[in-house]
Length: 180
Image (cartoon, rainbow, N blue to C red; front, top):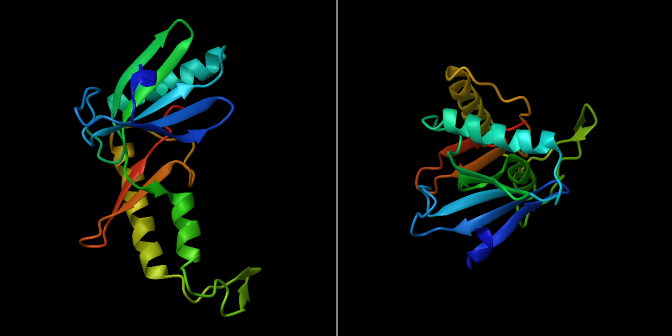
């Protein structure tokens, strides 16, 4: 089905998985944002464990539909060797990308103080107040998942999406990658 879409881009690709960002202005797939993420098993003959993890991500996403810290699982397709999970699109960037951007403010020196603590050079341009506020929002997101009696066994900077409300500077956090 994704091949019929005209407005899509590949946002992630590995040996086992491909994730597409698909424009869905008519909300045909049931998403709320006008975009969906389609997670596809890239291997022509995926292992049963890869298929299980993708199905599990769909089940967990369905279970957590009311959880604001995760994205909704919209649809799962498994037929004729094709396996895909449709998820509501989560706006923002990964925490990993946010950290890199926070340390690379354009027009400023990255390592301007030269002092070290535990072998890490400090960056006087890094805003620790903002980082602390983001850490609190990430903690709240994980707590919300736990309130649904669910756990995420692979919390990493690649599985956290961060978006900033430009109006008030608040953070919105989504935990992704629920199938592991």
